[in-house]
Structures are given as structure tokens and as C-alpha cells.
Image 1 (cartoon, rainbow, N blue to C red):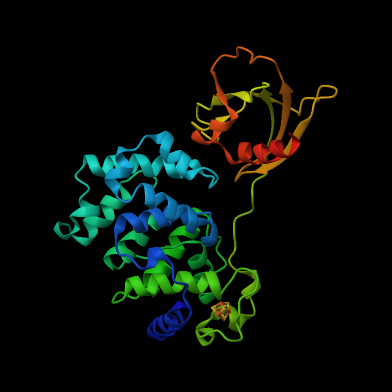
Image 2: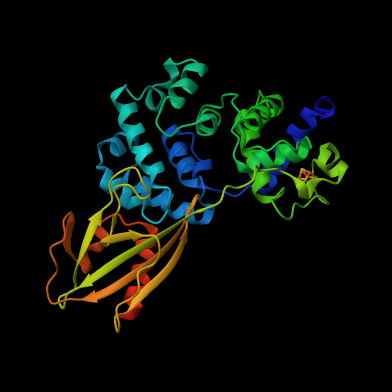
Length: 348
Ligand code: SF4
């Protein structure tokens, strides 16, 4: 079935479509591997509109790999605050330090490296998988490596009418083979940009514009009326339910307590209010205000209650620090804590 796809026709049509339709974005205007890497990490699980502001702020403060490597983790997390998936920022920071310790060849002296060495050096960095390595290799160096993000999986699944779940081990292997087959070896930068943007804007999850699709004649799912059924994912596992009870202490001169998370759990190293985790939300004390929030993470549903306690003096609680509310922006906070602070401001 795959052999009947006309690859060069798809290359030509997608490139032309891209030239006429793509969004102008700063990371598309550069071939600097560091800037491309930052954009790719930010855009994982983040929409372009939201990611753009973060990207500009991040590269404003950390314009090159040396600045990022030299920064403290706390500061890097502050620039990531609100984006979620903080392990991405921590990994990027560690990767920058590793790359600099090893001479930063791939970022600064790539002319001395073979294509395979560039790809392998990228892949050896913490948090850089085949997708990110392929994206940097093709966008920065125009090297023929595929870059499979969610948009590309969807376009491939439909073009090849492939009903293997793309997020399984077997599926990843199979789709990688399809991506290698379809890759335009002569113009990998343009091809990868085009297929990703085509998936993001045209062959969308719920309303692909098949009627005016430039590659409709090559699309097996269109021919077989299976477009809406694709791509296939493995069944989702149930979310873990967690109940987090926070206390927001508040003195008359607007001071409070924060605690830094440790251990291998969500929001590692971020700051939050003192916490008691239990198997259900704890009742609110009479006449005391509280804020209830539900927060969904990839594998967990967080039920959070923030108990607001006005106190004349802050209590002594181990592993907490006393701060003024006015300096809370100096601490990297979880998105849940930021949401609670928004509501807290309205309650005052
Ligand atoms: S015909 Fe529809 S499903 Fe197929 S590639 Fe085009 S937009 Fe996507």
C-alpha cells in the first residue's frame, strides 16, 4: 500500500503549501541550533501563541547556551513558571551544562562534526529524544532526519491510512519507518517544517480541510473514508486522584510561608504554600475562607483546597521560609499555586 504514494508529488505540494501558508515565527527565521532547541522544548505541550511570549522572554535572558548553563536552576524555573512540565526546563538546564562542559561542539563548532555525530551528540543531551534531535538537526543544519511530533503522526497516519496506535512501542517504530520513507532527503528543513505546519493548520485533529487539500489525491484515509478515525492512540490509563490541602498564612503586614518541593514528585523544586496531602479534601474551619481548585496534569487529577489563615505571627513550620507577598514573584511557583494566588487576590 505504501508504495503507491507519490513521494515527490507530496514533497512538491507540501512545500508549495508551506510557502503560501506558514506562520512567520522567530524560531523559523534562525538556524541557530540553541534557539531552535529552546523553541522546540517550549512548544512541546504548549500552544504557539502562549509559547511565543515564553520563548522571547527566555532567550532575552538566556540568549545562548553559555548563559543558560551559567544560570541557577531557580532562575531558569522562574522563566518557565506557568508553562508546566517543569522537568523540561530542568533537563534543558542540565543539558546546557553538559554541552558546555563537553565543548558545546554541536552548538558552536558543528562544522567539525559529521551529520551522524551531530545527531548523536544532540541525542545524548538530557531531555533530548529522537523528535527534538531530528528537529534541531533538520532545522538548524538541514540534515535529513525526520522529526515526528503530534502533527506529523496525524498526517502520516492519514496519508498511509495507518491504524496502528502511534504512541505504542510498535507504533513509534512503524511511524518512524514511514517518516524515513517520506522524508525529502534533498530539502529536509523545508519538508519537516512543511509537514509539521500542514498538520497544525490544515490536516487538523477534528476538522481537516480535505476538500481543499493539496495532497488529497495521495491520501489513503481520504480514499478509504477513515480520516476521522485517525490517528489511533492507545487507550488512556485512569488518572490518579490526589487531594492537596494547602494553608495560605497571612499576617497583617502581608507575610506568608512557602515551602520548596523536594523528592521525585510533581513540581520538583518549585515553591508552594505549606501542604498536607490526604485521601480527601480536609474540611474548612468555620468562618475561614478557602479556595477550591481542580488541576489536571498528564497522569493526575489534583483536587486542591487552599485554607486562608489570617494570623498575627507566622507559625514555625519545618522546611518553610517566611516571605513577603510582595516578593512572591522571586520564587518559581507551580501553575496551581499561581491560580490560587489569582483567586486569593480577589478575596482580599
Ligand atoms: S485529505 Fe484530509 S486527511 Fe488527507 S492529508 Fe488532506 S487534509 Fe489530511
